[in-house]
Length: 382
Image (cartoon, rainbow, N blue to C red):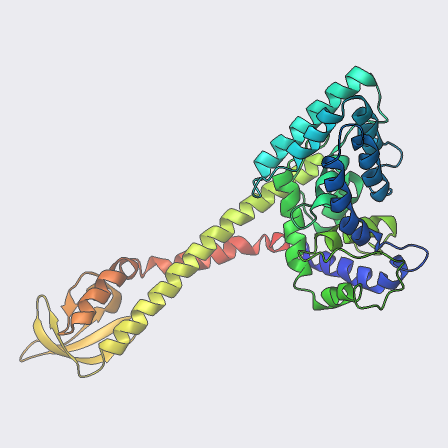
């Protein structure tokens, strides 16, 4: 993701915070709705069949224009509740059933909600587009009821934000989007939000009396999911993207970008493995140099006992007595193959630990260099 663009988005949101929350725009109302909505929905779900439609209507009114605007999916459910209150109530109860964060199960619950709604529409309002549910409406029922656990989806706003921050994985279109993909974008944005102290401080001013708010308690939004949606929504609604440069690639272009990113991810994994091997090798060589110091008596498998005269990360020089003189050996080779040993119990165990990496000592630096050079051509994707 493009962290630079994301930082600019946060900066523009901060700069316009007072405006979007003034007496004209009042975007803080989302926090007030999220505070009131769960109570109204719980009251509706606990109401009798006769009282359920009117109680559900109060929850619909509370949701203001977040769900219903040009189409009226929430009001459609109120109308369907007048026909089959128990069915509509059970639809919500099933949708709100605990899923322990299992997004595949959550998607299944949403799919069932769509199916039940479509069945009722065909039965009582055949061909109606006005009352049809969509991914935004169903995500909103979940989000307004429990914003700590859910993200709200609004197709145009979320897609524009995805283009701006360079998130090109497709969550699909239509009734049942891929929540795992959409939630991943939100999670990645949220991670960057939590690393922006200026944004968090600005958000906290929502609660400290700085803003002149109409009466109404605010949801605490501990996980910042409401803030996340507010940023996504306000960037599109108030053109907070400003002069941030970003392209809006078509499907084919996005696929190419994703393929490139997939390749980069594999190259990064290769680089990280090579880097791990290199650092492990350095650790092994540092240990050898700490133990096999000048003057230490060692035993060579062929030449017998000798005294170390010199050592570095590449070679070890050993003087053998009486007539063999001083000989030079590759340090990693003699250590990995147990050709040279010393009277140290720990040394034996350490060599078991380091043997494999020492055996690859010649190839490891080359592998790291190759991996680094391979990544260099893809710096724009890092």
